[in-house]
Structure formats: structure tokens, C-alpha cells
Image 1 (cartoon, helix red, strand yellow):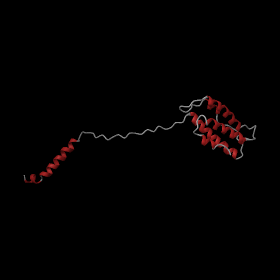
Image 2: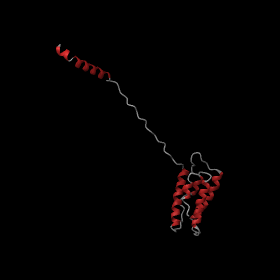
Image 3: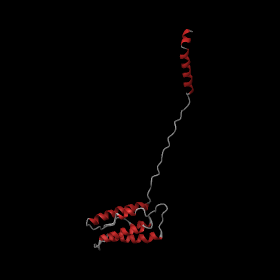
Image 4: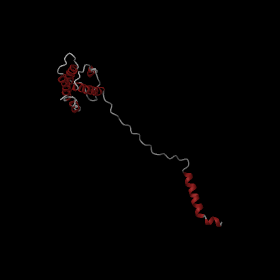
Length: 151
């Protein structure tokens, strides 16, 4: 009994520890689930992609013309301008329709091998047609298009 009285505090603590640890048995502690962030990535329209391809093509044409070379092929199918899916909220307006045919003709004139004179002027005319359309339809890329002009 003397041993029990001396270690009464020890046994009390040990009993409490055993009782509290037994209470948590069988309980499943759920950790908070972290929300997965899903980013909505921009998907360009068919027309936006085609416009980027035309920009790259005209940048290449500019380099060729400045280097004194005569471009002789048009790898882009410009007829796609009439059918490519437009960006959300955009449509082919009368104004757009009037510009697109003039642009196609001017772009084809740049690679016309029968008329090698004034190629710089024909190229700049095609780029000016881009600018004229973009001044009324989609103004965002105007500064980028202006960089295509040959000074």
C-alpha cells in the first residue's frame, strides 16, 4: 500500500493517458482537402490562329524583300479568311467583307513574278490593307502590324 500511495500521481496520470488515447481509437481524423485549381487556358479561334500565321508569313516576306530577294510563293490559303471560325463575339461584317477581298488581291500581288518592279510598294500596300481593316474591326494588333511595313 505504501508503494501505491507514493506513486498515486503516477498511476493517475497513466490512467488518464490510457483513457484519453482509447477514446480516439476508431475515429477517423479527416484532413481538409485542398482544392485543385483549374486554369481556363485561352484557346485562340481559328481566325486568330490564321492571323498569327499571316503575320509570321509577312514577317518572312519583309526579310526577303529587304534582303533583295523576290518572293515567289504564297503558302497560305487566303480563301480561309472567308470560312475560318471567328473569335467569340466577332462576326463578318459588311465592312470586313469589303476589306478581305482587297487584302487577298494585294497579298497575291506581292508574289506575282510577272511584275518584279516595285515589290516593296506592293508589299506595303498589302500591309496597309491589313491596317485599314484592323482600324475598323479589331484594333488590338495595329502596333504589331505597323512593324511589318518596310520603311
